Amino acid sequence: MKTKLKLYIYNDFCCDCTPGLAFAIASNETEARKMIDEKRGGPGLVWDWGHLEVRRIDHRVARCVSGGG
Image 1 (spheres, rainbow, N blue to C red):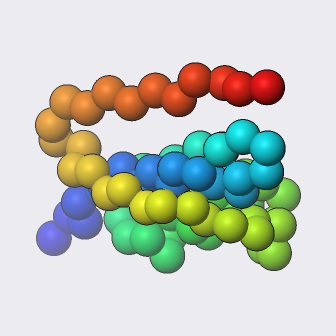
Image 2: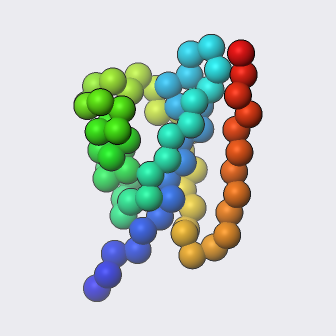
Image 3: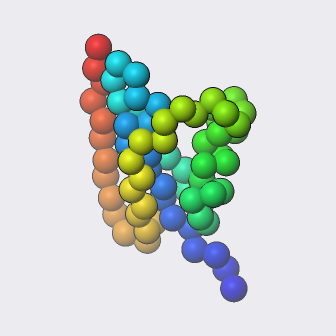
């Protein structure tokens, strides 16, 4: 059976002066976090995952985050 993929969105990711955003399309949250860790440069570099939002990817969705500074 084929595993369904989902979109994992981390709002307020590694928030410092402004909130960050990270996302991954993965089969579960553990895989999503591992993929983001690797993209960031390796495990241990993420100090705050923020708020998780999980979306099915068989429906349309839009999301935007304005930059600050």
